[in-house]
Image (cartoon, rainbow, N blue to C red; front, side):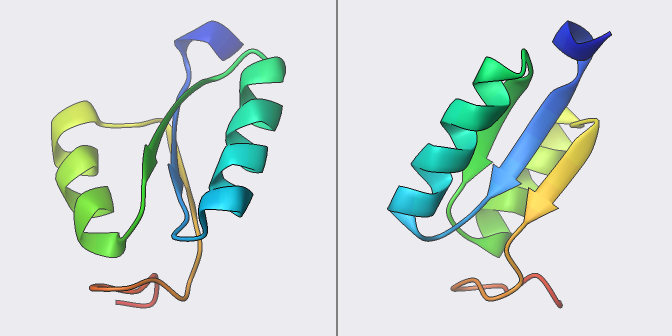
Length: 65
């Protein structure tokens, strides 16, 4: 089941994004990343991830919007 899940990780801090990416990959999840809210929206429309893990304070378009 985990291998089928596509996770979108949205984090603008590169160190935090890399740390979370490694942890999620070790858990057996397929992960794609975005660095801002607009990138996240574009990826969501194209890839249709199973779940989105999003930082709320992002550049361009924040997680609240």
